[in-house]
Image (cartoon, rainbow, N blue to C red; front, side):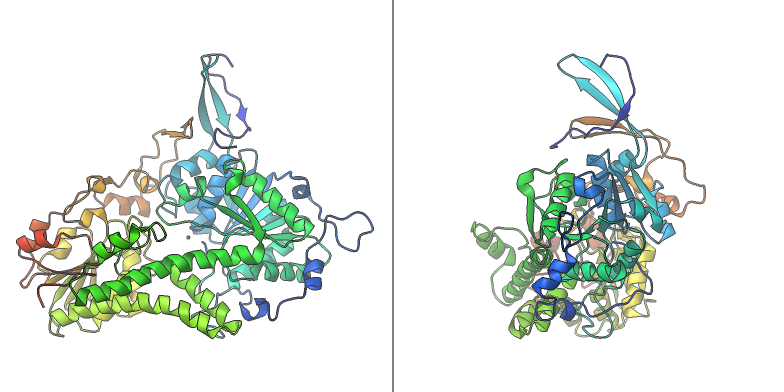
Length: 612
């Protein structure tokens, strides 16, 4: 290449290592675990019949055919454009520029957001990956050997659509749909609602070409690969498909990092020759950027169970340390010191040993419930009881925290103003689903306070009120503030719900964060500015985005937020609180001595209070 600014189509692999949307509908929702358990599942012979072999002519089994059978994956369809499907599709497209990736979702509003400057999922780095793959992009090159530079043109290979017929073009289909807990019928509160999975599989059966590889990306109960295989066989008899389990291990706030540098990629297959081959095909897609040593091929049962167990183990550690925090509050021990001491043991480690209000979000509780239900259907009541207690302890921690607030006011919150700092289910996100704050608010509302003021730096006010309304019904006493000082002004008590760095009384150096940095630049960046993104040794010149309409609701919402998250001035907050000034620290982010010097009484998780 010469030193001129030449442009050419870029189709080779880029430089490098070379959540879920609800797919709703009227699809049936059968029992999840009982029909999938080894006690009632198909025999080995049934499994053979449903897993076609790579066979020679005249074989008793259907041969596994289609483009994917020859490792020629050219088109991938991701069903579900939510927290899992969208980021997964974007990273697949980024690292496989020769593969077309279509993201299919039945919600046109969600699809429209993915094609706009305002993505429906907010993750650090996501907007750059989407813009690189969704829009044409110029990649700056520099050859150190010849000392020449140039520009490669990267063609778009990520597309978002509501057109189900795109399934017919796919060599490989990822299922990334919503799998919530059932709220009705058999297994309500524990079993997984499979409506979205079943509907998606029916769409696939209606359009997919023979030989297509179906990949489970959603978190599903054990035996779902077998369930999907059986459903496809009944809807498209005689047509070969292979079904793989490839669970996601994404944490909100770090999803792109989790996808680009995964600690492991699990690929579960049927165990038949055709299943092993399909697993190799999927592994070849990941090998564009994931080292082979991190790709683990196992059977589909193990893969599906491993996802549930991984989340259950992490949640177990949180519930365990929270149970110890209750002991600390009745003694002279401090839970942070206990956590530090046991975390230094290399057999234990320090991760997930921070006491607090417990775990929220859409994963841990749901996955433990699914694991519990699996154990119940297998007749393992003692196992079910063991895991059920993890969720019980988690709920008890929030009840105990809210109960302490009521006790401090001698059981009377009538006429009191309470302020909550934080609402999102975890630090650094704007996701209010299954927020810990909702449970706390529900319990406090039973005591009829005058007002519960809520401030969260990332959550939208309408989302907060929606979540509170769903759980609590009447949310007239709940008011959302865009300014933390107004929220706390004239409050009788303040509750710290999330461990946002902004809330720390002795803030970390990294606490100041720009709203228009990577996490939220999809909401507030100027779409007419051509950005430059440097990643993995390549410099991408991103195509300018079209300007939003003047009445864009997302732009209005963003313009009402502060540009920078400054550390809170606790002296200012303390000065404007009403006596007695109580702060209930649910995350251990406050320096108790410093707060007491400001005339504030602190009741913190895992520490004995001097104000008994």
